[in-house]
Length: 393
Image 1 (tube, helix red, strand yellow):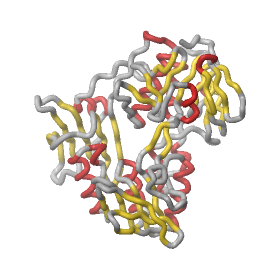
Image 2: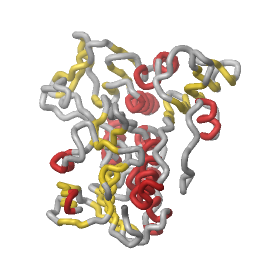
Image 3: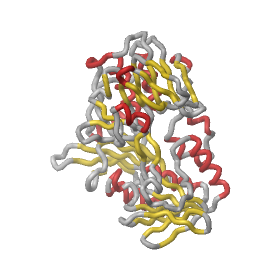
């Protein structure tokens, strides 16, 4: 446990890391908090990057999180963690500095998986991805000069990117190994988004054999079931992987991530939160914004209070804006079968859906273009009540 005046070090200025810093102060920690941040700018929120910022409708600075000044955090930018010696409570930085800590929060997030990582791009040509603020800057600039785009991957990020591309006037093709959002949301949500995407002018193609990137005329193109698609730009959105390279020698993580207990603890004075974590016997990951914030709070409380801290209670919650659809989902996805329509307007452009178990119990909910307090959404979805109240809304 972390003494009130001890040194707390947070590795990663992700939303999980920043939330943990906030919660440490709320929990009564008065000692130093050092935030290790590989980037040079202020911490920012990732969800806006694939939406209004990408299209230029909102300025980049709208993605920035509130300043850390009130938290009295020592924010070290442009530096990364290189190694960790848990037995000595020593963090080695990329500068060579050995940083001693009394409590450590691991919040290094994840990195995008590329087609090259999967052995499906052997051209040697670099792939465009969307993960960081710098990636969003690159893509937004390319949007201004490109006329066409191929998005590889049909998950939430891929479809949001395709939506932004169409809004920017680009001829947009999505190539994937299954219908959009099928694995994430289930058949009903997949069909809803696919139909709206195609109605918006997006060309969607999928094949279980998957996609391979090839070279045509000195630039990347994509092959699906032997058919080659070409465009001015190709962007890969095929998943992410935990950033654990610096932890592998410590014995606290493997390539699947950092396993945590019910209170996001890794060791007696180490906790972890966000995309880098796995939990439960099945080593599950939940790389989503809401989960990262909840885990950041639980991890900080556990670092200060130990067993007296409330355990982490997964409450799946996702949202996405694409093709004129404001989607909010709660419950364990993907949702099976057809939902019950609870509310709607005449053309179903505004609607509330609920999925139920064979016994009639609610197991999931979806709102479409319908404002609803998150508490009510969780209640509609049948997700468990929160076991702690967040310090910040």
